[in-house]
Length: 326
Image (cartoon, rainbow, N blue to C red; front, side, top):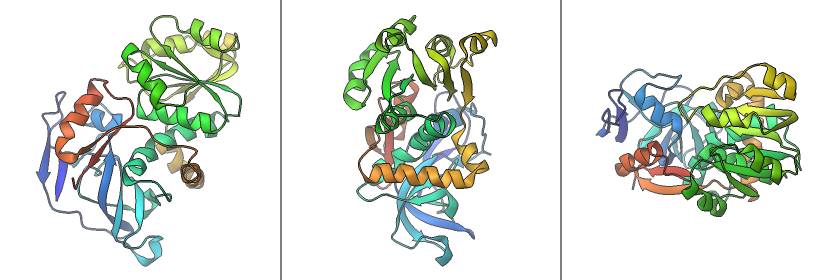
């Protein structure tokens, strides 16, 4: 089969190659899937550099999440050949076939394409865990989402709107503001250049934001601390800016807000029943048309470099989806 293999760690993608490699052999408890679509996530890029907290042994097949059709499964797994499934693992998604634990898969909701399903899982589970599980999002609350062109941020915007929140999307790219307005359901789109607290304050009538969802870190995190309402929550999702921010503890003390660390995958592993419930609710929302992932582009896996470079150069508004069989 064809698979995107990381042989060496590199900053310029030189350690990756689309390679012919043996198809995976299904192990007990696993489901063998013909991959129809697989989406690119920021950790995929970081893992090619050795810059992610999880560091798989070399060589490995890149790709966190995918969607496809079941080829082989145990009768008691809950899956049968021909079933449409979505899910993934920390590696292995960018290939024509993948074999993963049945517990890491779920059925694709009716009416959802393989590409949509591949773009939905990790982004929406992260957004739901942060906004609902950890922050108790309520209808009518103000939510500020930074890094608003990224897949997880767009999922957070989409989900927050579906649950009745009022959403401010924030981006550091003036060129992307109009695209975010067109591709997301945000009520307002603002720039994160400089002191964006003033923009958030004006929009909310001085109330500021009940939840700030920040995957950017760095200077954006610093300014985000000024955008949280008293009693609000600032969710640390990641550090795409490259700088891990720090904060004097008197700031959350005086302003009365909480800083919440978000690791959706670890949350689901520690609380598997909640993880299943989250996936079920995301599937329900997708099936009734309440949420839909934003996809920037769909590419054959042979054009993997285009997708990775677009992510590295911060050109995307939405997810990149690869189709291994195209």
